[in-house]
Length: 480
Image 1: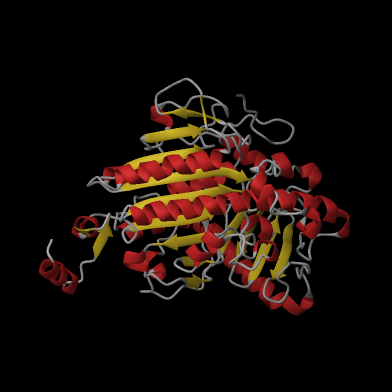
Image 2: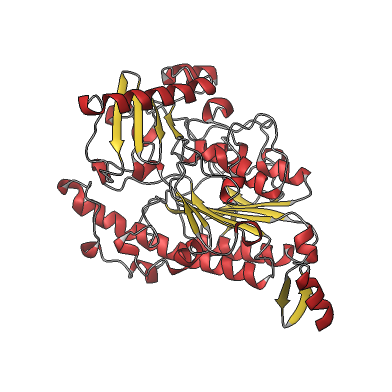
């Protein structure tokens, strides 16, 4: 293309990419559907980034902070059922756990479920998945045959592990165990970078899901250079960590942040690869997490709880061609089931029947105002690290822009004004001064449950319905 031709194309509004010093028409990119690179970590809470104000990470998540400045930041993104398997099933299908049936870890997603990979594949996409899967339900260390990969073709996956150094995986149809060299998140990122380089030269769009295991515990296993960035004695705790949990929380958080610093470097490498491949404008890059981690807040650990440290997750969406190049924040509550339809909406792909989430692509693009909606929070049956013995309970709730309201089987349980008390240190439930507010939130929750035919039964009824066999911790036993 000569200069005159270039100027003519530019005048028509078609961008031109500079690749290896040569002008390459972006017409091919612009005329095809956007690529999707969906990157999600395990147990990374929304509060734990520099851009969200965590004092321990100021200057230590530079790549994420830069990405946030170029993305739509959904600052009230909620993990609807904040634990690994339920989130992954909802993220892939756009359905709630009561519908797809995965409300416990290590349950299998049915083959008849319609996933985003299958929908994109039908629309002409190459599909790929690298990292942790955790919806196969046939054992955490076992080979997963093609018919159970839910539409993903490129495949370097293990069902589940939390050994992040030289961890195992299966490569496509090879039934022998392979090993990621070194810290697995870095090795997996390198693999996805190569995938992006190769696929960017083809005419077909691609969708790639990269699922990291960290910063999920064990917390002390990040590479040494990242662990040396954080000293437990210097960690600043959230005010809702009780004094008797402070020592353990600081130690855990130092390791947790080390994982995060390592993953921040991986984010930077991915962004650079997308830019150098000349596909930045027409690629949807998503960064998020499956759920958060209490890490001593409210005196509690891990996930499943309805508190903000457990349910709120980071969610950045970068798509310059449609969402612009300048970052913006949208504080609209956004639930897990909304991910699939919103991505399909951004791609211009028809959303299949049976999807229960909402397509918010027009809101992200600025064509519609964010609605006054609430995101659902739920636990259908407590299990694992949140057993009944240590306070686990069935619950249903909503997270609005300002409030968290939750019921258990005995009635109203939690009501937080997250604007007035951002660390959820005062439970207002049943206080006379908020009686009208509580009634309003209760009505909104009941409307949402009625919409999804959720009768809010005891967890044992759902376990019986899906014919799950559970142990004394309410957990489906798994084998390796």
